[in-house]
Length: 514
Image (cartoon, rainbow, N blue to C red; front, side, top):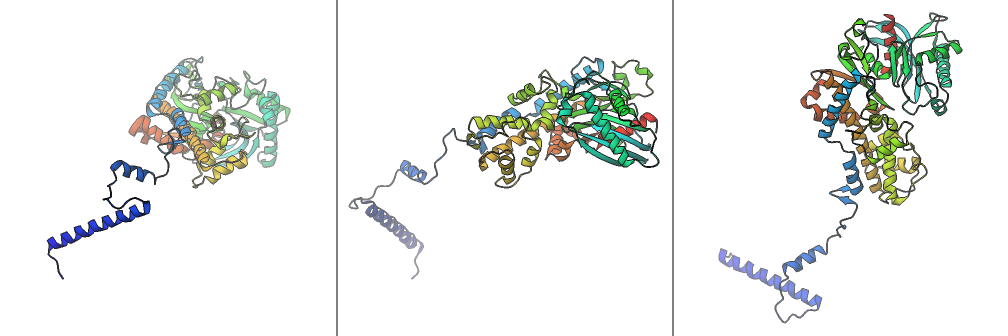
């Protein structure tokens, strides 16, 4: 039977009231309450309390996360994050320091004239040897220049033992000569047999260079401290070692690896004005107008208008005026073999990033914030948390961070880690890696600004950090965008593989007029 709308409304209303009353009656029976009187309606507070009782307990305010980020990471983020305004402050200060170094040798940035006054045109030809000492490894190379920007190379790598790094300098250079002799014997053909070979020596340490093949070591870096080398002409030391080992080689060019990187890349890309190394250590070189190098004696005597300057930017801001140092950075510096030196390098180079992370982790273990407060002998040992581990951890995108677990438990020997621990460790690695990339970008921005190349400049970058460390190159590009805005599109960062070996050979060729 059909109902009119009014009847339908009354039926629904009465049905709803009846259902509600029935439900309350059953509830009272179950709860043992009297049903003789009308049930009371719960107050709003009672309903809120009832709803809250079904929710999981909220953590107390001192629990481990705030806004989804673990508290340790929040604290560390404040220490390691370098905002855009700080980057710009660093750029401005570095530009000032670059100019000072061109005027006077007694400055933080040595701004060493390389005496390389020519850049290759791609037509150089010939076969040249190159020796590359850039850090932990020493390479011997034969570079064949075929013209038209084409090169071929044979090479062999040797590891520099720790005792050689810190022992007698004569033994170190004898080791170099022995490696060269072995390499030449393996690769020499009939054309070269018995002939004196020309060699470019890439020596990636601060030197006072007085000519294309003369340079005096100012001080060691990168963990080297061989005795009897500082203040000496390293070309003479190498030439003497060749004589002792009866190796027929003449050193025609002394090359910093950064200068070599610039020259090598310019062989293919003529718009290259800056070369940067981001590996075990860090440095930058760039093309400067000779008229701006006021400390250079008799600049008018050079048959060129430009010269490559080796900045030795690792020593930037040793006084800590603008660089954002944390207590971990200070601890790394104070425990190093060269305290209060190479501060910029200690913030961004591969030799130190792992140690910075290790010190921060040690503190978190001591406060009981990770690993249940349990450490290991490896974790307690300096430089045992390698920068390669940071790279591996940053690449770990598994939900449980299983590769991070393998690093911590299998390599660092932490007894047990939780996923929450591993999240903190990965976050810390990201903070340290990102800061290094952003500071490196600030250095590049300062040089490009100094030489007024914001309208177009190729920057050749060599080294394992730029090539292999996850996101490093893109983080640098992002930082450049923040610093110079749209002009960042004109600053091209390009990978320059093996610039130190090929570059040394090219400079030897330029010195010989090949």
